[in-house]
Each structure stands twice: as C-alpha cells, then as structure tokens.
Length: 586
Image (cartoon, rainbow, N blue to C red):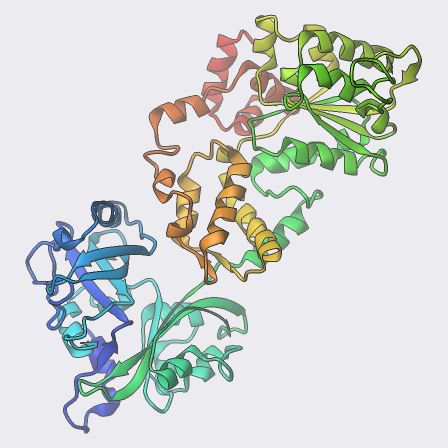
C-alpha cells in the first residue's frame, strides 16, 4: 500500500503551474525523526543552519548551549522512546552553524510502528528563528523527502497527535490528517475540496480567523483559543496554531493549521455539582464519595467531631461545610488556630477576660466561646494545645460552662465543637502530651480527610476549579492546563495536598500569557518528576503505613468493613491487616 505524502496533498492543485517548492514560514514547524538510538532518520536540506541534521548520524545534542536544556531534552526523548510519554513544550537554546545563539520551542512525541511498538521519536520544533543570511522558510518538498518513511503505511503527519490541515488561496482544504478526522468527525474524503469554515463552523470564522490573520499579516499565530462544532453538532474548544505556505520565491500559496482539543473544564465542574450534595467540596473519587455519604448524618447531629488528616487536605473546609448544613448554620462559625497564638494569649482568646485581669487588660474582651454562641467553634491544630489548657477545655466540654479570665461569673457554653489535627493524637497520648479523657471527649465522631495522593481522580476537577477561581480574581482567560502538566500532576506525590496544588496553579497564573498553562509556567517543573515525587520507594512506603489513629478512624467510618477501610486509606487489604496486627487492633 503506497503512502501519501504531505507534499503531494499540499501541491495537488498546483501540478500545472511553474515548478515550485512550497515552504512553511520560519515560525512554522520543523519535524525531526529519530530512531530508538536517537539516530536521525531524516536530514532536511536547508536546515543545516539550525540543527545540522544528517540522516544516519546521532542527534546533535552537543549544540545545545545550556546543560540543563540538554538534560531535559535527553530525558524527554528517553521517556518518549521507552515509555511512550509525550513531553510538554520546552524552550531550548543552542548554537547554530553560524555560531549564533538560537532559541526554539521543542515538543517530543513517541513514534509508533503499530499500536504497541515504539519505533522512535518525533521532535516538533516551533517558532524557528532563522538567521538573516539564511532563507526565511523551510521547504515542504525537502521536509517531505525527509519524513516520508514507511510507518505502518501512514505518513508522518498522520502520526502526530494533533490535527493538521492545509488550505489553498481559495480557502479550500487540500490536506487533512488522521487526527483532524478524529477531532472534527469529518473524514479526509469529506473535508478535502471544501472551505475550511464548512468543516469547523467556528465562532471565529467570520472574525479574527487565525488562518486569515496569518495570510493577511504574513506571520504565524500560536495558541489561539477557538470554539468549533463537530460533525455531530457537539461544541468543542480547540487550541490552534496557524502559519503560511510559501514558494521558494516567497509567493504565498496557502496556509497550514495545527489544532488539538482542550479538556472540557465546564463539563467536569458541572459533573461535580450534579453528583455531590456538598458543592463547596470538590471531588468525585471513591474516597470522597464515601466521605460525602457520611457528611449529611454528621451535619444533622450536634455531636463533637474530630477531623484528622495531613496539612492542606481541607479540614477547615469540611468543618465549615458541616456547620453550613447543620441546624446551627445560621449562627456564627468561629475558628481558632491553637498553634498560631502564644500560650499566654490562647486562654484569653478562648474564654475572654475581664478588665484588669492581667497587665495590659485595659478593658474586658469577649472570648471565642461567647462569639460562637449558638453556632460552631472550630479548634484547628488541637494537638498543639498545652496540657494546662487541655484541662480547662475538658472542664468546659463536660460542664458546658466557663468563666472569663479574671472573672467569677459562670457563662453557658452553647456551641458545637469541631476540632482538627494533622498529628497522631494516640501517639501524643502515649508520650503524655495529650490527655486521653480530652481525646475521647473530642472524638465522638472521628473523620479522616484523605490526602490528595489517595484521590488522584479528583485532580482534574480541582485544577478546573482553581483555574476558574484565578481567572475571576486575576482577570485572565486561561482555559486549561497542558496535557503534559496534567501528567506531571497525576504522578506527583503532593506532600502539601490541595493547598500545594492551589499555590502551584496560582504561581502558574502569574506567568501564563495564553489560554494554556505549560510545564515551564510551574514553580519548578523538575520537582514534579516521578523521581522526586511519589515514585521514590521510601515515599511509597511512607504512604502505605497509616498511623494507628488513621486506621481506627477508617474502620469506624466503614463500620468495621476492612475492604472499605483499606480503600479509604489507599492501601491493600493485606497491608491493612498487617498494620492492624502491629497496632494490636482487633
């Protein structure tokens, strides 16, 4: 079965014209193919001033100026060839043949021989700067000769996981790759010969069309956010890059566009709203559904609740949600961070004080217990409470009354107590730093909030939520994160949990200019690699060893069902059984 080349499609309407060699403009794409040993398959004539490519020779990585850039590209090539992982866009600087410092953006994709065999890698080089003494364009004809290799009887363009099509000067489609068929729903036979607006039906076809702007202004347009209609009538948002097709003499003969769909953030957020009774808490994973199933009953009760979980998991958000959906929801929610206040001030903050109760008390003060009357008092980081205050808090919980510091009048305590900690309070009791009687007073209903690494399915929902939040507060129009960014997020350990994810995206919003967050917008992309994340053996071991308190809480929440408790903890039933034996939990 013969292969159809990109150049044959692009030049189909020019067979009877003068001999022309069309080119992609300087800010278009250069495609480089390497085999599994990183040996170049294609030597593109006219591109020697850039990468000095030569077929059969190793990819000239030594021309890359920065050692870190070289390592990133080598790592991306290795991931693509060994694991089939596509990279995000990387800014690379190197020395050209003319010894000029050149900067390009490179994306590495796996090259498949068939559905299961990786035959090498594809490097797609965007926004290629060309020295003034060199031609401003790259010949498509030469590019075609370079990439016209038999890969399962498909052209290399069909191997690229992005839609690619070209048009002539009459706006008629003259080539249409396989991914373009998949995204639009139109076959190549249906698309070729038709006007591009008939296929895409975009909201920008009549105004600010990227192809029209490229042809009229003679320059490329990158990362344009466009909404189109698929063949079946489904609306779809795509990210578009557009450039020109020119002859050797500089004559424009058409344009080329690449596009790929953006993830449907709105649909995922709507799914969260439709499937959760608590829309303030984002999540659809199994552990979060289990949590939601318990919140309704807990909110209806007036019992004390002890929330446990790592820092950044959202314990205060759960506490506020319980208050909001309780019979006390119209009354105050008062939060106290027991670790944020000095010991000398904490008692006054909790119980209030009378005038002249101590030096500097010029007037009386209402404490948090009084402020929370009829509502909920949230005691965060309760594990940091000093023993002396633990005794006083226990008395308040038992007698439901208290006195201000320096006062003699007894005041009623009418507030629900929700406390939270990231510590193992059973371990604290064993070391004598936390009172056992207070512990059992606080944990009438224990509830464990799972860490983010145990609810990875929720990351896309959380990302979409924070993107909308920062779009609103920072007045930007970011649509989504790049697939490479999402891949990094899904493999990362997230020691700071949801709070760390939020701060990471806030950092990215400071630097992102277009509709898509790329890996280079992250605080330190290298930190998100599996080597430094959850892939470390000691990290996995740590995550698979929950504390005694976490196990007891999980068993309590699941009514003793070990299989459900294991899922809640993110470990296997065997691991749970072993940990129960260690802690002598029957």
